[in-house]
Length: 174
Image 1 (cartoon, rainbow, N blue to C red):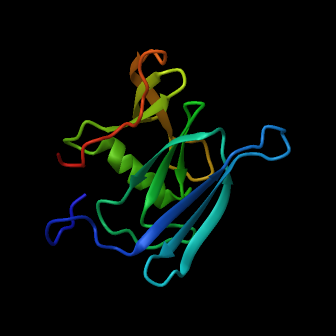
Image 2 (cartoon, rainbow, N blue to C red):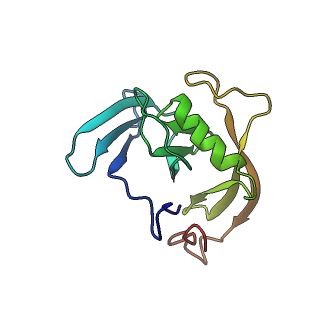
Image 3 (spheres, rainbow, N blue to C red):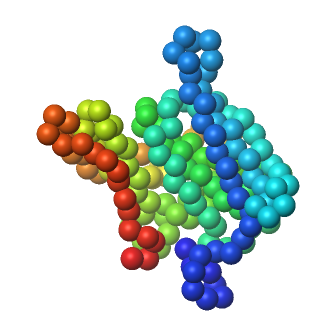
C-alpha cells in the first residue's frame, strides 16, 4: 500500500493487535480471538473485543482501506482477515466498514484478487486459496459470513525428505 503523499507505507499510528487463545484440549476452554485497536504513540485503546474462533487460526492477512473511512464504534482502520484450520475465514473487527475493506481487496479492478495460504509443516501440505465473495451475500456484520475460500492449488512436500521452514511473499507492488 502506498501513501498518497510519497513513497513508503501508510503513515498512521492506529494499530490492530490480535491475540489467539486456542482450546486446551479438554473441552473446558473454547478458542477465541481478542483484538485491540490502539494508538501506537500513546497506548490509548480505541476499541476492543473478544470473539469466538471457529477453529485454529493458521494465517492472518492484514488489510487497510484504500481511502479513509470515518470511525465507527467497535472499528479500526486496520482490518485482519483470519484464515482458520477448518478452511473458514473471518473478519476482525466484525463491522460493516471492515467488510467493505475486505470486499475492496477481493474485488479491486485491475487486480487478481486476494490470495492466502495454509501450511501444515508436519504433513507437508501447502494450500493456495483465493478469498471470494459468496454469490448473493450481503456485507452485514453479525450475519452470515459473506466471504469464502476457494482452493486454487495444493502441493505436498514429503516431510521425510523436506521441511517447510517458512513461507514468504514478495512485498506488495513487487
